[in-house]
Amino acid sequence: MIKSGQAKFATARIGAALRAGLLAAALLGGAQAMGAQVSTDWWPAIANDRTDDMRRMLAGGADPNLRYQNGQPALMRAVIDQAWGVFDLLAADPRTDVNAENPAGETPLMYLALMGQTERAKALIARGAQVNRLGWTPLHYAASKGQLETARLMLQHRAMPNAPSPLGTTPLMMAAYSGSQPMVQLLLDAGADPTTRDLKGHDAAEWADEGRAPTLADNLRQVIARAEQRKRELRAAQGQGEPIAPAPSLPAIAPTAPPASAPTPSQPGIGQGVDPAAAPGGSQAAPERDPATVRGVSGVRRETYD
Image (cartoon, rainbow, N blue to C red; front, side):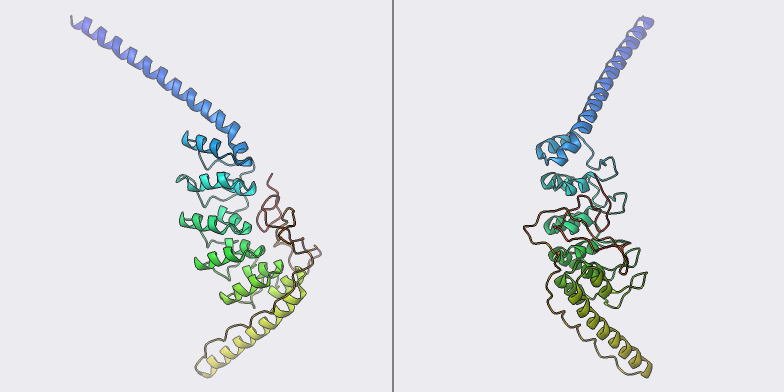
């Protein structure tokens, strides 16, 4: 009797195990099928801004942090393709790493700064995107394209106006190279030091020269001369034990005509970005300034992401 009961119990356990195994196999097959479907549909959905397809895949458990074949996070790939509907879905997903870096060390916020996507940048910062970081920062990228509103947003979130890149390049130098007088003035008003030099010894005026903005360069030289004079006065006052008067505000830079290569809003084109490696004094010609886009350029560097 006991043996008969044990046999029935064993048979029942075997049957349950078989059913569980079949269920697991079915689930695994379903997951594999979903994975195959995601791998087939994911990147076309981004490239073509197919929000319905993306919403379906995310709801089905697709990882929003998938990377393209060249290492670009999906969120940054959406910026490259200007797939803003898909970008918004990915950015809103709580699983998305908003500080994911691509192989060049860039972040989604840096791309948004380059493109002047201020409202999306604001939303990403609310989700924890870092404004300040070692090396290149979102403020560098906004300055390189004269994106005033986005730069203001970064400064409101305590972006450092004198942040040095690995080459010592500051946002002010990027603004000077871009030829954007309003951006230069914004950074000066925020406390950017015009006397700073990069690792090759070049200041913002020389960067403006390299960017073919001679009037801006001349005005910057005046600002630099006054700032250096102010520093000498402060050092002298400290040495004599005299009280140090508050520093006067730097004079506003006179408006300058945009360089001949500056785009108008109606001009089409692919952005070339700024190449920090092409320091002032180099033989490389300054790139034309086309409407901001990250296609074919990794932020302020000329690196192609296809």
